[in-house]
Amino acid sequence: MSAEVTSSAFTAPVPLAEVEVTEVAPDRSTAPARRGSAGLRRLLVALDTVAAATAWGVALGLASPSTPPAGLALRAWVVLAATLATVALVASQRLYLARVSSVKAVETARLARVSALTGLLVLGFARAVDLTVSVPEGAVGAALSFALLAAVRGGYRSYLNAQRRRGRFSRPVVIVGGNEEADDLCRLLLDHPEVGFHVVGVVGRLGRARRGLRDVPWLGEVPDAVEAIRLAGANGALVAASAVPSYELNAVVRQLLAAGVHVHLSSGLRGIATSRLLAQAFAHEPLFYLEPATLSPVQRRVKRTMDLGLGGVGLVLAAPVLAAAAVAIRLTDSGPVLFGQRRVGRDGRVFTCWKLRTMVVDAEQRLVRLRAGNERHGPLFKLERDPRVTRVGRLLRATSLDELPQLFNVLRGEMSLVGPRPALPEEVEQFHDSLRERLRVLPGITGLWQVEARDNPSFRAYQRLDIFYIENWSVLLDAAILFATVTGVVGRGLVSVRRHLTGDRDPVTPAVID
Image 1: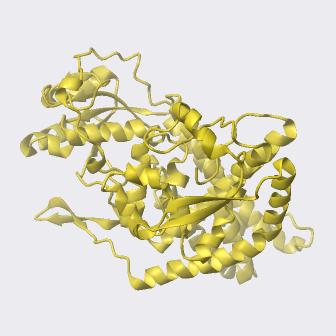
Image 2: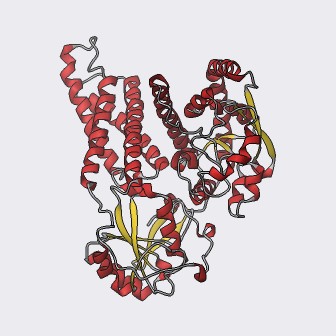
């Protein structure tokens, strides 16, 4: 089991007296079967194939009337080769495995790598078959391939996540172990149904399998794991290594593998990117070497350069949009165009975070009456059908245009383009000490939590992703988050425009920063 985005420090032990665990007989009818995994993989391969063929067909002018007929067939062969190379490279990056592609930032970074490599291969293949393909054509093909691959996979991800929240396409698994780590693994899967695992039971010592696993049936002791998994209708096991003695761990893992069970073994680490874990063998025994998290001065300067460059260009391009939005807001209720709110930045410094006003003028005064309807867990507040949001505000939030004034905060050095969301002072007061580590970096307009779990109501998911970003930050991760944000905003914007044109008044997705 990958330990990328969870921290045992965030999960307080539940007193045994407060937990009721009963020995429930497993019911195979209630465990969702993992249906259609092969069909889903074929669907994803088909989507990637269409995206790659379309991108390279456009880049090499297959549909252009100006393409000479004599070279059309040869260009078609190059497009075919580029398409096959793309799919093969995607497979080589393990992006047809759910455990890899489920992390959006990782998927985006690897798709960029695939597209760049395919562009180089196309230039080499074209030269080998005596076809003139210019470097700009190759660059356009690579960029368009990346954009289309990310777009179709974004749509696929949205569909799959929605289905998994309904209990479909999820692998039924059993937690092996009964300590705090097992509890944490169970909470992780409950917080992130999009991972595609559904916990149907736990095996371990009954006295230790009570901690926090309120609604999870106890299926037996560790030596009975294979039989318990079979009776529960599961085909996967998540083993909490720290919960099982070494001699018993080796035996049960071998038994599970021999029985054809998919085994995920926890490393016991939390909040560590898998890229920092290097598998090594000491006397043929598996160990991990852990790369230190380094934030070099060069990386910090590159990040600030990205903020200034992209922020300045973005502000210039956004000027007409800001002007039109300002006029629309003023015509709606004659109130102020901008809304400034005190937020906590790096090192605990409080600053004014600016947004286009999307709510009624007295929105903060009305908040007290709406607190009871909060749809998020913990100190964060979100209300899907917030009555304070104006009609213009709904459109601005859905398209994230209300966040554009924060580019001024970026240029002033109060925020970054990418980072943890800037928290309210009253939210910070409720943060655990571990989460206060987020104050070591600049808050961002967008971040890992926004692109991975913005619709997830769990405060634990918010904590894990923020801490993960702080401890594993890189320029490549920032670039992946920015791209994922842009594609997400465009997708939500198109949906919002369609709803406004058709008169659909379904609630729209809130802005990037709540």
